[in-house]
Length: 147
Image 1: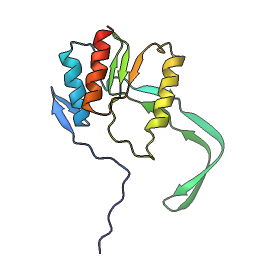
Image 2: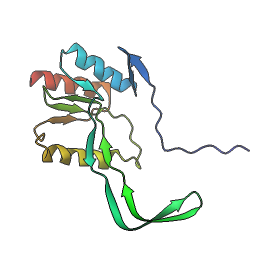
Image 3: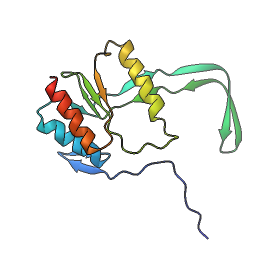
């Protein structure tokens, strides 16, 4: 009997448009909506380091492939966040999200990003997380009406 492979990854239908590969059909929908509204924006063009890398000077132990790994002075990688759409001209960030599994890192990473915006003089940016096409329509309409 074959065992089913368990993965926590959510599978999205990738799409290509204007030479850009979108991670989901909702991202593509949002892209087309923003483009048809003549708004200036970038798609996945900005990567924010919401927590810089650092060294943990004490011991760091965790499960490894061969038992338990114990290291000292371990370099901890930075935490980064790349929103789907960013406009510095119109001061908005859009992160299209359909289904988010309960053990996904997005909620914590997104809170860190909001704090990063506040601490880096971008607290006046509008931030949206539409989860379906209707919400994308409402977000784009709100942006257009407030530009």
